[in-house]
Length: 283
Image 1 (cartoon, rainbow, N blue to C red):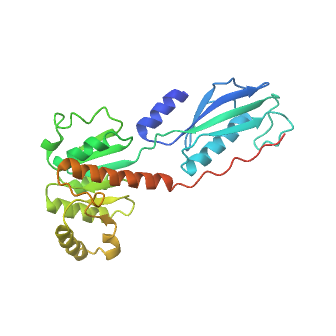
Image 2 (cartoon, helix red, strand yellow):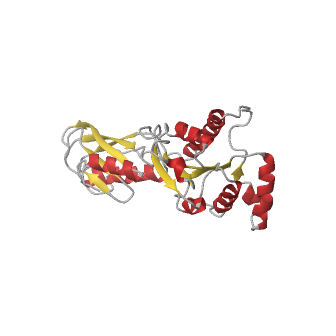
Image 3 (cartoon, rainbow, N blue to C red):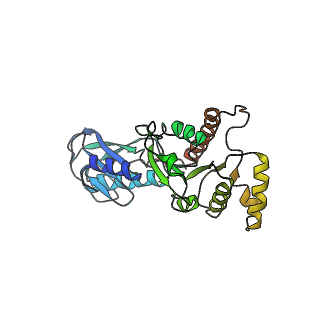
């Protein structure tokens, strides 16, 4: 990835990697960098500089603490640059005081996968494409994934990944850990195979299945026959979508499923541990 902070932000956004943008917002007295200087801190790498020494080392340490607890709220960090300040990473004798703004970058997008891009799947994709997610559309039928059919999806907030997969469960195996998925293919045999494959991956997030209660009763029998337990089956939410919505049109079903997925995304986001308080720095 290029070395500048702006290129680093763009690169992290493309890769979905976490990072913190550190900006010098206030300088009192002498300091190694002026207000407006920026750097980016990643999990293992940094780009650009806000001045080096104790100032920068402390900013990197705090930024990585924010990354570790998946913080989303910006923080201010004020440091004294004097030889009398009890600094952990050596002395800086500039004589000034610097306030840094630490902003966690919203680059790590959740992954959502829709298996089956029929009428309901396409309606669901149209809603999900407006969210800041990585949206995977998987179908065994190549004709469901033509550029003409998906023309309304690119250009939204989502980053779109289209997978033509004659054996959809193989595409499921390649999805990142934590992916939330909805199974709504045109074929009950495909749905059953996907349920089996999803249950064999314990690192996935939400797993939703479209269909009736009768369909799920049959699937439970099949899944138990191949070794899945009641606890395993409880990982699948079916029928997928918010309860109480009676409409049967693709648009209404998609609306209920999208609302349920939004609840899942919010629950995942707010389950992060709150960041630790910033230690007080005394002269």
